Length: 358
Image (cartoon, rainbow, N blue to C red; front, side, top):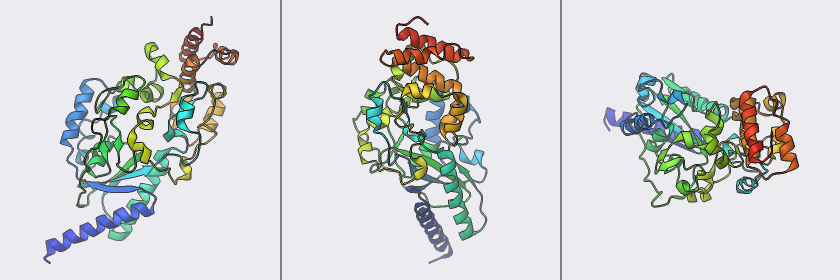
């Protein structure tokens, strides 16, 4: 075996070790990709040109740094992409909560500890393990924290394929997982992408409450409930409010009803277990939280990022969609004089939808 063959064997062994170390650290899948994202770059800029990103200005920032890894982190040669499952191992049945208009539906990923913190620590441990084995090397860790095309990278790394709902799907896992990356200056051998398996299925498109999946593999975020309840800072468009139902933070419909998710396994991570019964709370109960309670009970949670005003905004819409009752009307009226014009406007809409004069 010549020197170049020895080096190739050494890099392959390191790649195998990295995958093993990742599994030992609680990462369900680790793959490696190159940094060539030209096809994904074209799709990215097409979506931006159509305005699908809405108010998410950061999607259009940074020029080509999002689509050209070596411009974001000079010297990058390969990317370690990881998957961490998050479906809670315990908690209320999501479909049962979704079908009860008096309950508050919160996306499964947000029920426990903020995944950015959990996954980032795990990725840093993996990077440290590599460093201990080979010495100093150039790297940066990312968990949805910089301009990174996570899903196309993960797809190239063999972690799954991008489904018609634009989420990553894995054949024996579904889509209930987070993604993270380590950009490295190591010439690691790359993995082979898996073939897509959506076929003729359109379950995610058919079930989307707001028809945000405007075409296979094409999502208009401006219509997406996750965008409307999390990313949008102002008023939720009136015509879309009835379609939100009882979804107050995010939306899981395209995952809940995807056939591949029947293979999903609960996450072993206790950090992702529901906190403060957020998996099975009533709208009225959560609408009663003052700002101090909101901050206390969302500490360490991704929910905190929307702030108390948007929390009340979202729940007011859901209460407007709920069956009329004295308790619902009383809850809404209790916020009629809220200091925030944003909250007041949504409360007034909800009362009118309940056919009650504010």
